[in-house]
Image 1: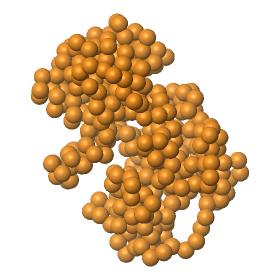
Image 2: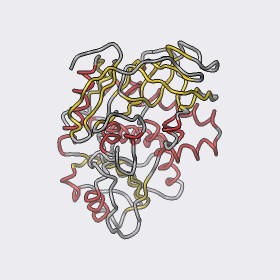
Image 3: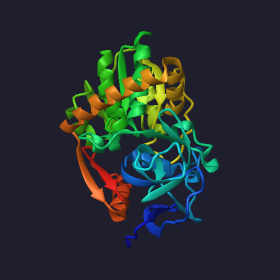
Image 4: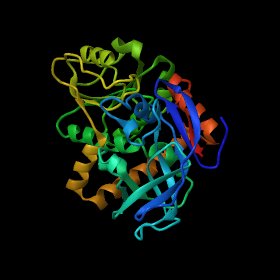
Length: 355
């Protein structure tokens, strides 16, 4: 893989472990467009999900079209405006948003109170969540950790509100599957505010890691379901997306379960068809829609002030268990993505990549 000054990193759809570097197209900006230089981004299972589901019910490959047989994996990145032909978006301004793995990205901008929207017609199928570029400050001590968690912590935050709401309806415990996933860890930390005892289920190799986090009252491996116990009624949040495991959890805890939210797809390459289960029926939790409803009900300023306060508090605490390593260049990015695909990436380590 040879580095070029301005590049796109393409991924073979037939084999996600294979990447190809190509010179990015240049050209003058049209009126209303801005050119963004990608500063840094992290990779998590969230990005693997985008690739695995890219041609399925969630067509993420369509967000950033690529040559036949290839895809451009979406990432959430800090970006800098290096050229602007929109009077409402200043050159030098810094934002956080949804872009492909590349050195640069061009979008037609529609300014908003919090930044700007990507107004590209080909991406109008995406919820506003994915088309929003949020204005951010200059890098600080938490910047790299923010790159890791900003794409996933909103789900943790909104799920914590979901759980807190059910505490008011009598919930007595919280059961989290995929407990070593970063979104799950964020939820478990925030759920401490509710006072609910929280039980985590994770792969056998990650049990020790999850126990040492300090946010779970008990942790069991997927092979130890019979040894796990929850207080009824229990809120269950699943991050695996594995319908066989969802069925096993539902069968094991059927008498204790209350609401059952399905959030992630860490264990599957397709959007799962739910097994035929008795009540309570699992329901999909789509963070962009939930957050939009919360913002409308609470008010934009109050909601996001509350979010950023919790995010900063959580990020500062991650230093106790998460090592963040900076990496640079397309070779490192491709290697980091492969490590997530094959499961060799430790949950105690995160890499933040600069092109």
